[in-house]
Image (cartoon, rainbow over all chains, first blue to last red; front, side, top):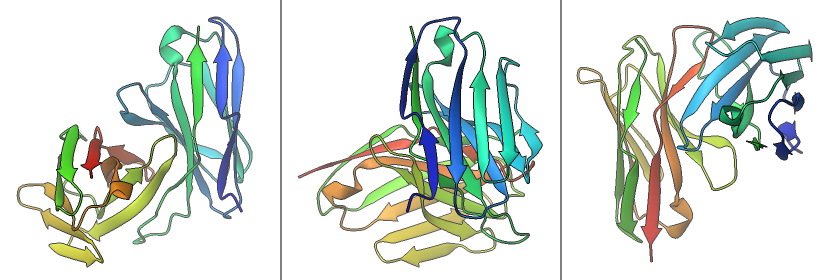
Amino acid sequence: DTAVSQTPKYLVTQMGNDKSIKCEQNLGHDTMYWYKQDSKKFLKIMFSYNNKELIINETVPNRFSPKSPDKAHLNLHINSLELGDSAVYFCASSQDRAGGINEQFFGPGTRLTVL
Amino acid sequence: GEDVEQSLFLSVREGDSSVINCTYTDSSSTYLYWYKQEPGAGLQLLTYIFSNMDMKQDQRLTVLLNKKDKHLSLRIADTQTGDSAIYFCAEVGNQGGKLIFGQGTELSVKP
C-alpha cells in the first residue's frame, strides 16, 4: 500500500500555463507538507497544513496556492508557470506529537518541467 | 537563522566505512535526522538522534552528535553499492515541524 502518493509523476508544460499536483496520504496523519527540490538537489519547504489549516507558508510566490480539502489530501496549484518553477516537488506527511520524533513520510515526487 | 551545511560528494570503495558530516545552527532542535534519497525516489528516514544523546548506533549506522560544535555525523560501516544515494541531514525548524535540510551529500560506492 502506498503511504504518500502524488500525481502526476511527471509534468511537462509550457510557460504561462496553470497546473495542479495532487497528494494523498493514507497514514491518518494530521500534518502535510510541500517541498521543492531544485536541480542542485537542494530541498526546501514551501507549505505545511495541519488538519486542513495552513501553518507554514515560506516565501513562496502567490502563484503557488495549496489546497487541503481534507486532512488526507494536500494539492498544489501553480498559476502562470515560469521556467524557474522547474523542479521536483515532494509531498510529505507526519503525525506530530509533542516530544515525538515526528518522522516525515515522503511521496515519490512530481518532476515538473516548464518549457 | 536556520541553516544546515553538508559537503556535496563522497566517494568510497565497497567495504570501507563512509562518514558524512553536517553542521547546523539551531541549537533548540530536539531531534536531528538523517534522510536517504535513492535515485528517482522520495526521501526516507534513515535514522535520528535525540539532542541529549552523543551517539546512537543502529546496525551499520552510527550517528555522532557534538552539541557544543553543532556537528552531526553519520558513519556507515562496511558500505555497500546499495548504499549509493543522497544523504540529507535535517533539523526541525522553529515553526510547525518544518524540516531544514542540508544540501545533501551524494555518496558513491565503487566496487
